[in-house]
Length: 110
Length: 138
Image (cartoon, rainbow over all chains, first blue to last red; front, top):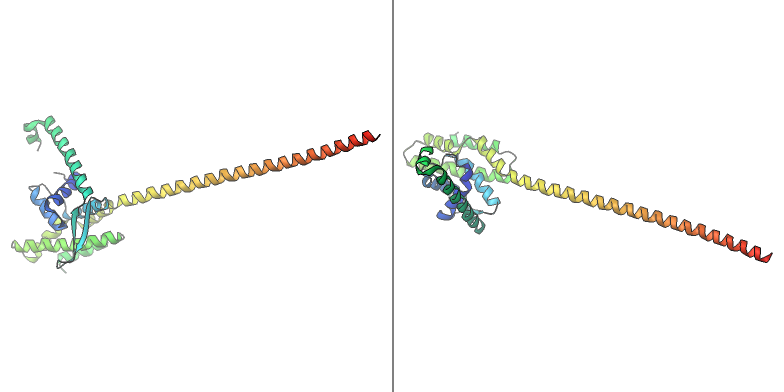
């Protein structure tokens, strides 16, 4: 399953549900929550986080309390608004696909 | 040298020229790889196996560097847009200057012609007056 187009939505949702977290914890949570569907190279998730940060949807700061320096990411208010909008889009898309495929056809396609 | 060390060296080479974003990515990659390896050792893997798994899951250094560069591409796009806007503003400024200069030259030319016309007219009037005065005296 190609998740690249949906990575931003998944990252924002993970940060909303788990709260501030460093990259490794975000990716571990993504793996767990996606029931194994998450199969991207983990190193490619960081550039997505940088992009979200540059767009003001995610904030980050170095956590000096850990033995090694690590960057902790959190959802910004703009990120929360973007997540709500993306969730609406996703639900509309999923509803449309279900209507076209039907439950039985959707299972065959999957 | 461990597999993680080798990986980080290669990633460092691949990230050449990416500046602060690359330095930050390298730090995060090291933290990530060591955390994954530590988890794998907890699951019972040897150090070598754990590092191999961590590096394999992170993805090839070239791919990670390429993704990082493409994520920064939008910034360059924005810079290009600003550059184009600046060039357009400069072009507009030059056009305005050119129009203003042309208008000034035209105005100066008109003033010169008008002055000349006044001078010629003045001389003609003076000559006419003199001729009239001479004729009156006769």
